[in-house]
Length: 357
Image (cartoon, rainbow, N blue to C red; front, side, top):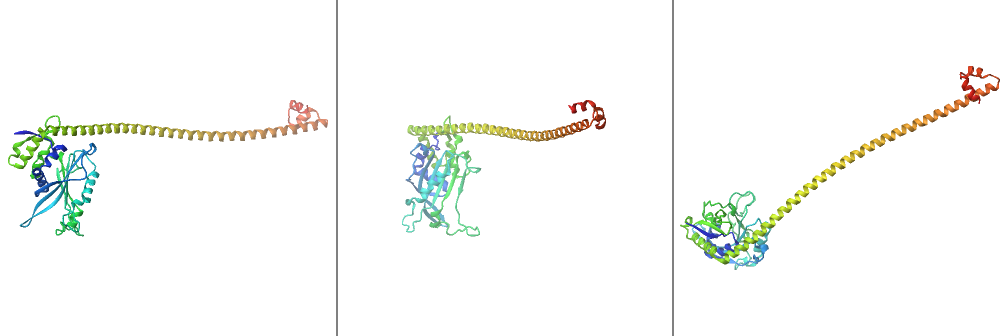
């Protein structure tokens, strides 16, 4: 039978179910792959009280985990930092929250004189994909190695080591596509967004029969069904929708602005390239003009030299005429006739007459 439940991806719904001790134990036991026998919600300094912080929700737990060492069962306290975000948030905010956990004096083990902290696990429920990781759920655990890279088994759970490190669990909600291969995937199947019903994301349509043999999961569905019927819860989901719609509109506006800026940058780049080409052309033209000017200067020098040569020839001719005139006058004064002077000098009589004037 299909039922309609509130979508736990919403902060208000997620907080509503995770503050239920039974559901918290069910969820954390599946994530840690260990039995959680007791769990409490711990207060923290950061809370989602403004619209700017709605994009990330966090809740801290102190869980008593039962572990088996051989035939002996042992309980120990583990701090769980659970962070959920629907947006592709920068890791800096995750690191800030972790930093607050490391510096929180309340996380020191009780009656521990050396001030060792409880071991910590960070759980990230992400509404987006992480790089090229194909697995919907991945575990990032620390190990202790010797110099040669061999794992040191004894001492890995020493309080000193656990106080300085933490393990992480990353859940990529978009990769939860109804494939249930283990206990954790079954528990997280209520986050499968392919089951969204209607035009909004507020309601999921889930086949209740798939959980008929699991009382804990039926209890989770019961709480989610109650949340879907709660008017205050629906109002809170509407507020979150409005916020994410504003975020989407803002991102769309930023994308459009970036597109316009990119187009303008391309236009400016083209104009710059055109100006560069024009500048190169002008430079070539200037070089050509410079070459032409140099050629004209050389031609002018050649003409000036020719003028000097012609002027020199004119002076020489003028001097020769003067010499011929003086010679003709001397011969004429000695009584020679114009015909005799012409015969002697080889100058025709007409020019002899002009010289004697």
